Length: 473
Image (cartoon, rainbow, N blue to C red; front, top):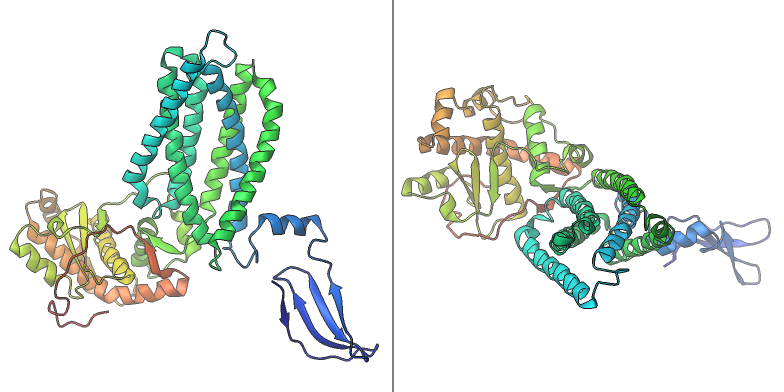
């Protein structure tokens, strides 16, 4: 809605008094209200009417209200690349649909409607089962790695289209191939839809998720309509020309993957996930500087998972770190704050047990401590480099790096005490370093009141205040 902004009253040469001016969002449209000598209020437009141009019309129809202030800075670049990939996907989808229809018997006088129906039912049925199974196995990780799963969805989509194109060449295996393709497209539907919701949440900056999502749907509908018109031209050309079909598939698939890669890499997420936190902590321990979201997002892998020396499991059951009474004593001794317990059953696994009262800040600090251990293991044969500005005891930091002999003992899992000593030392470092790191996160523009670190649902209860008399952060 338009809103009024009071301005300083001015008297013009015509004897008019400006009583107010108003504008519609950030658009050039402005209106001025003046009062004549006879008391009449006159409205004058400055810059044209709301729908005076085609650009303003399309902006109102296809962009969220209040654009660009109502969305994230990366919105336009992402939507441009997303539009390109959607168009390419629609074209290759048209080629695949034609191949599948030919495979089920369209145009073949010997084919039966019952056979085609059974094939289609099997294809859709296996897809439904694949959708349920994939959502069960990976549903919780889609929020945490939205960019990587978004790109994964489009890669699987292209592979599924490829299977549908080759299926008619193998009549005996046609049903099996299209069923596999159906499972792939079902996975695309789950991962693509879920990650799109996560990206919409990131883009909506005025609690306008519904508007951003609706306008994204309008954009996609327009693109699909354009692709449909293009398909009307392409389909007759490729009907009896397999070479042209594969050429168009190759060209549009390459463009589709290129557009998708650029789309996900241009997104700048301000929330912390495991990959971004790993990048931040590693850089911070080396330099004492917290990267801003744009710098960290550039380094975030979007094709393969982050390579790390350890597997960090946030929200593990107590049994994952406690096998004997001495383990419980060591865990309590190494976690004075009391809102989480961290343990290492092996050198490559770091399990974090969360208290029922754990907050997002506890998630960040526990993973920060785990990342310190990961950093130590990765650099075990060199001195831990900590910037002089970081409030950490530099003279003792190198003691976190185990010797070759101690490290070999840890690898063989014969020295549980050494593992707990590493956990205890990392806790001491984290207690001193984390306050400055946390302040750096806020200063760099990171969101810390919510995270995407992917904690599991295990929570435990113990006497927080009885663990230690040390002051909590």
